[in-house]
Image 1: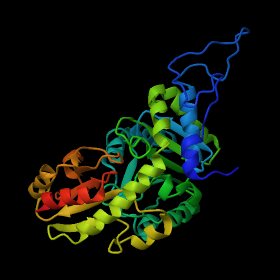
Image 2: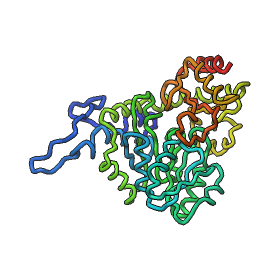
Image 3: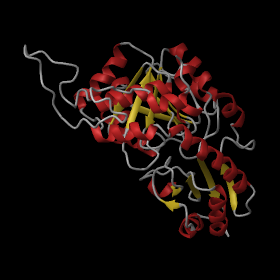
Image 4: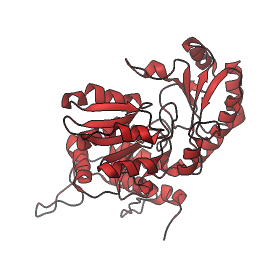
Amino acid sequence: MKQHIQTLAVHAGEVKGKNKDIIQPIHLSTTFERNEDGTTGEYIYTRAENPNRSAVEQKIASIENAKTAISFSSGMAAINALFDTLLEPNCHIIIPDDCYHGTRQLLDNFFIRWNVTAEMIDMTRNSNIENAIKNNTKLIWIETPSNPQLKITDLEAVVAIAKKGNINTVCDNTFATPLLQKTINIGIDYVMYSSTKFFSGHSDILGGVILTNREDETSLSIRTYQKMAGAVPSPFDCWLLNRSLATFPLRLKAQCDNAIVIANYLNSHQNVEKVYFPGLPTHENHEIAKKQMHNGYGTIVSILVKGNQENALHFTQQLQIFKHATSLGGVESLVEHRRSVEGSHPISPENLIRLSIGIEYVDDLIADLKQALG
């Protein structure tokens, strides 16, 4: 029986033990007893497989409508696994010009030893992608919406371009989540999430996940990398994530409903220079977002506070409900001055503040923004 995603978020991946637990127990054992003849059962060693990890991977795969989910100890570990598997020495990768700084730093600091060339382009223009492709291009890395300026890339167009050159595509779909944007269904080869964010939703789990419908040697090697490199989530983190996913659709809807109200409020505020939010008709890529995003436009709103970095930081200091902290996707509302955390090569405007909208009562959030903006 085909089930609604709200039902899958609660029940997918359930494992029925002999005790018939309603809530799955935590399997903390690092090793599992062999059969009398020395053969192994379903589980051998927790780095390779664990019941809690298997359960949460099945649940996430069901939510995404993907054949395979491979979980990691962090979003960066998942990104590294993709780079290590899909890239090769002396190759070329295309990434967005508004890209998560951790992705850029991983390429700049570590894959430089392979002489990997990472070309940053504006992916809102399809012609830029076509013009950037070289004979040694191995991967097109997409973020849509991007972090933090919420640029939108036309996924269908990228898939068509990539197929012509037999180039792999990956989409970091963390901001949209599978509830708003089905990248696998569109034809993207691999989708990646920081499960720390919306999947967890409570700012208490670190994790990442890769999903795919491909069943070739490359995809199998990502699973092998997970097991051999050992960057796996703990059983307790998997248990917490499984629990958190049950409320994921409810949390995200409340956050999206709040975000559109707040984006509209900020869009008319005299002390806000610009609002980045794909749900606004004034957003440069609104029509593409409307085509490929469904049930909402996300919960992240970025703004340019009028003035300079000092004005932007003053705004964060005046907030009372919103907390100034890294990360996003939790039930609590956060703000972050992105340029401060982007390392030695920051790309965000000095007056940009990224807001992660939580599930608090929206009028209270607006009142907090009003008093902080002045």
